[in-house]
Image 1 (cartoon, rainbow, N blue to C red):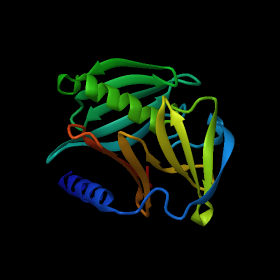
Image 2: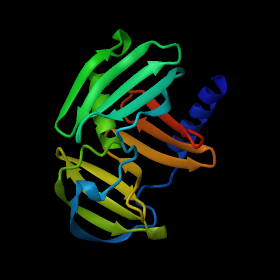
Image 3: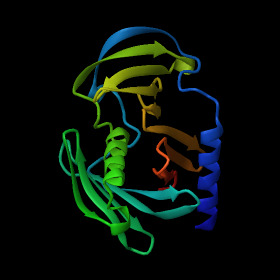
Length: 207
């Protein structure tokens, strides 16, 4: 557990200090019409229960546990965060048009934190995209593309692979990076707000 926490802090530090821009290697652009189903989100919810390791970092303190995700209906996803000791930290349902909290621990029950989880997971699950929307699409290296669009009147940038999977997101409140390694993948959420925590989500390849 301690090694996981140390690795998480190192990953966040590397991500924060990286000078690489989400726009690196991108050029030209055209206005295109896109559809929500055309883009694979960072986390694809399914009818089967998915489990991840999650760590929420507040400065030098952190809380880690399990992240459970399962599709409830076509558009609704249930998300549960538990500690490794079985204590429930947060339980909510998210859809493109709604967000319902079933339970939240007192330590997290603050409007800023609830709003952060809502916005973050709608990004991760691809629920923030309208069914159809206009975007600026740029061609990037390695067959990737950059999509720039305004969602809820805020500028969003998405780095997309040739297989239409999102590898990187930049918004006014958070930067998200999807890192693949031999032992699995790690999603890092680095928030811009001084009082907002950083979040690490990890999925081992053996799971």
